[in-house]
Amino acid sequence: MIWWIWIVLGCALLILEMATPGGFYFIFFGASAVIVGFLTAAGITSTDWVEWLLFSVFAVGATALFRKPLLQKFGTGTANREVDTLVGETATVMEPIHPGAIGKAELRGTSWSAFNASAESLVRGQRCRVERVDGLTIFVRSAEPGVGSN
Image (cartoon, rainbow, N blue to C red; front, top):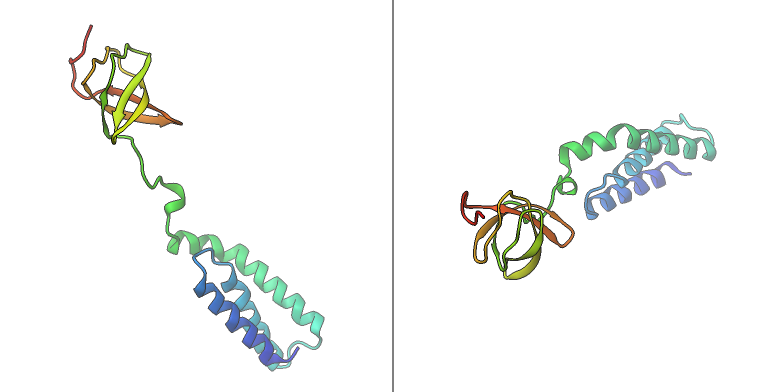
């Protein structure tokens, strides 16, 4: 291919990288196309198949070597953390719940199945803290020590 076509292709891929959210894929293909364009302009490549081979090797090699470090440095980091969690919030018991039993608790204006993870019974109206969430069940423990004991 003509050298300037590689440069145009590389610039188009680099612009495409800027237009897409994260991922860092097109940047390596764009940079590889620009490199092959310069090598072709310098007369280092002789045939089309050598250009395509160099383009493929540069793109795959750069992606394998540099993508993970770039994601760690510039990535958003939202993939590994929960956007909205109920853990640590306060729920209100709607019915008595014995230790190790499931009952109902209100959290954020909604009735939830609540598993009593504490060693004491929870009484109606008692405030409790959410320890974890498993599906549609919240695991709660008394937020007020000593309240609701048998």
